[in-house]
Amino acid sequence: MGTLANMTRASIDLNADLGEGSAHEEAVMAAVSSANIACGGHAGDAQSMRDSLRLAARFGVSAGAHPGFPDREGFGRRELHFPPDEVRAFVRGQIEALKVIAAREGVPLRHVKPHGMLYNMAVRDEALARAVAQAAADSGVPLYFGLAAPGSLMLREARAAGLREIGEGFADRGYAPDGSLWPRAQAGALLPFPVAVAQGVRIARSGLTTAVSGEEVAVPARTLCLHGDGAEAAKLAGALRAALEEAGLRVTAP
Image (cartoon, rainbow, N blue to C red; front, side, top):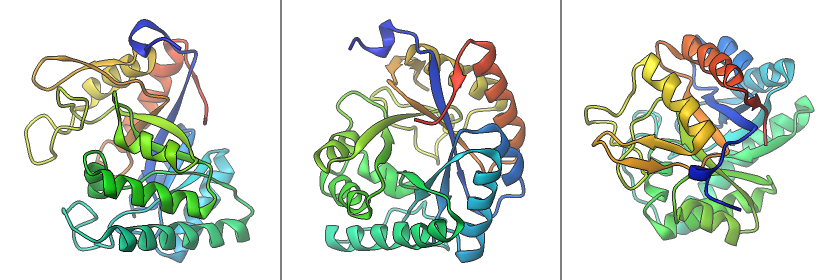
């Protein structure tokens, strides 16, 4: 298959990180096709997991697990270091916690997407990427969302673990020239509303965007993320869904 830079897609998945206590959850859920549900690491408890799963079922949204570092105080966005076997254990534990509740609710879990700093570190740390992918495979959930970038460690380790890898792009985050996400602490990391909509459509249609520093970047994404906890989350979700459909793309879960 050719590179996305030379192709246009007929469809794209639109996902959001949910179950994290946002006041906008229902409005965001109504606009997306996949929901990454926090499952007790950085956020989430049995009640929030149940509520998010029920919303996903109501709106026909594909449900997935969103495991992160066990770091509620830092919302999973602080760089922490654990041995790979501990990472594999706590990631699987979080996925299984959601899986149990999902089974009770009659909602299948379709995918796993790591959260926050766990995700960002797995982009560059092979042992960590392997531990997270193996935990996802251990859980029996078939799909794995990881950074869409040439040579992505996350996607390579997902394939090696027997998972179906789904490359992920980000509508509302700035990019570095190597295709990784621009650090949150630096200017340009979080994109304003109209820029995020435009970037999301461009990635979905062409697999390209422009880095914060001006270079063109390949983002061969099959799913597109927007963050569900921002002040404009509901507005962004609705506008991005509409813009994708206006661009001729069918928004559907993988």
